[in-house]
Length: 233
Image (cartoon, rainbow, N blue to C red; front, top):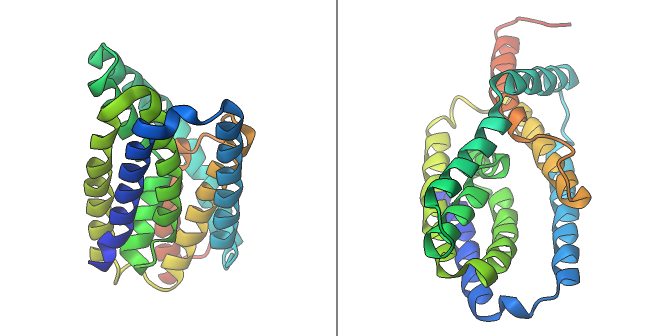
């Protein structure tokens, strides 16, 4: 149950925000909505920095993030996810229930924070990222449900299932991703989370987070090679 706690909290936050948004969200001013997003961005930035502070291997981290960004750009991960989202919304073809569900499902689940948060919950049973994401998704669902309606609510259980499955899968790898490997993974994950906070604060895409996702895999590979005696410096 510990591995699923973060996903449960996140799903509950999205559900609560959706319900509040349907009945009350229309009363919020545009100025307050913008301010709330900036405040959340600041909190996410601080959380990311805190995760990245135990920087035991700067070389591993730098190589993982830079090469990961290069691989992500070659694979066009961010562009493909954006295109997929646009395609799904176009296929929905109409406003209303289905449009609200699809929009919310994409916003809640297609992103680095869901993946990094689920990994943290599965590996450490301390779902601080998903707890923070619950607030972010709660506010987002409140704003979205105020205009898109009841379809947003259905994205909440989908979020729980998706993040819960990732958390359980990460839990199975807990014995492998331990010690220095877990620390390196946490540091790179923290950098991605901090970048999300920067994007929130700037209200534009300063860093393409999706293209950085390969860095999570690369840091584990480089860390494992280091444990086998392979040195890069």
